[in-house]
Image (cartoon, rainbow, N blue to C red; front, side, top):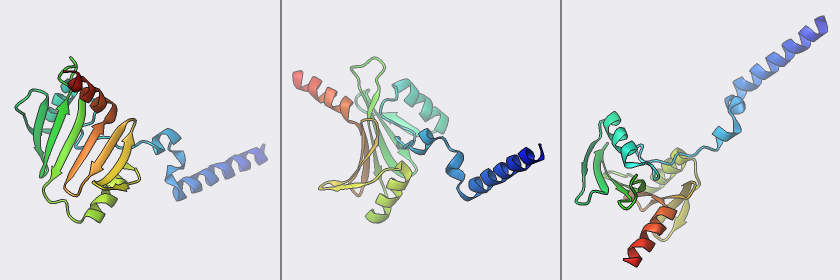
Length: 163
């Protein structure tokens, strides 16, 4: 009996030491791979209703654009444009664009974006690209961030081509 208590005590001490050294040990594996997939809380796939709720909760200064499917916001020195699908009754967002007023050095911005979105940057002709979620592509050209649901964008282009 005493041996079992000593062994249990040693196990508890070993786990406590492991958690002290490596706190992520107790994090579920599913959370370790979670990637950020929004810009200022706006994310492709959100409905227009969810978008309105976010604007009200965070007290963003937003206004509808000329067409009813676009929302323009001024948030923390960035001009943010949120485009939704006007053909769908739920009007899900398919693109979020944030034009930064003072982006700073591009290398520092790329590193910061990679850290925030927990994704590896890919350099291309137009700037930098990250895959940040299921079908979501983030791009940065040194001035603006674009977060796009590529499947929704392809559907919209195809629908516009048919018109």
